[in-house]
Length: 338
Image 1 (cartoon, rainbow, N blue to C red):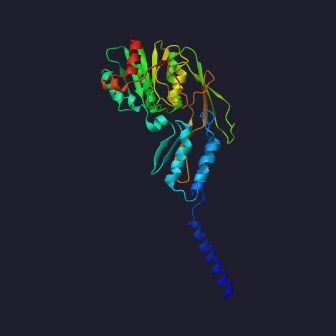
Image 2: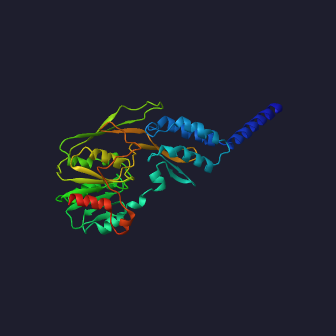
Image 3: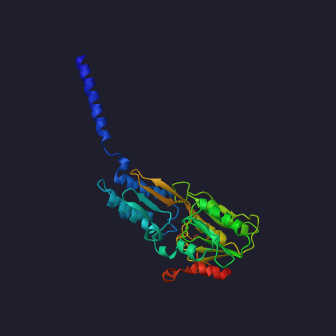
């Protein structure tokens, strides 16, 4: 009996030691190799726009997988991931890693190209009269000085987008409207185009979308048609929408809808070219990344992913003029409407 008890104790101790040893072994899913595989595979399964972005994701694997091993450090893995996603050039593709910062695959966001060519404070100071309503850099609307023209800017299509209706109510008798979508970060698509319903007398089809719903390359929902619904009261006045390379996502959908309207003009620079819905995922090491899961085509049957929507009238601000207090794009819109 004593020998039996000793055997049981010895067995229990061995189990405990083995379990304790296992607790100190790194979980497989947290190894650099496992994290790499998960990152690459998730993009392969879920990302919707490899064709539109001209990216061979299999070739990306062949290039970068040999660079990762069990001893790869976080900083090295972060650098590898940024190199993998940089060619995608998608404004919805990003990597956020603690201690390493955030990386945007879109060069305009990452390098802030032409970022200085938009200055909201300049507009507030030099173009709007005392009717101005504002909340810092979130939104501003008011009348253009010495002109019967209403202007609005807001930085995204979330809560600030309701200010579109506020502007219409505040200035129902102006000659025309300017909606400034430059440096608009997008947001909720449900806010992004309904405002335009007041400028039409019949519903307008303006885009269609389909969303990834499986791991296969062709696993998508059926195409869904998006319509701009007419709203009352009808506004028979000209509207100019200003755009630049930072007009992105939901803001671009508003531009798509606007392109169906005869009394709306797009003015400025080409938009960013990022249209689909995005989602975010978290890796085992806590890093968060985002990507697009949707294809979008305009009413003409074409995808403008990675291309952007060209304005009807191309105008671009100049640094020297801005130093003198002049926003060339806005001034051009004012001259068009006055």
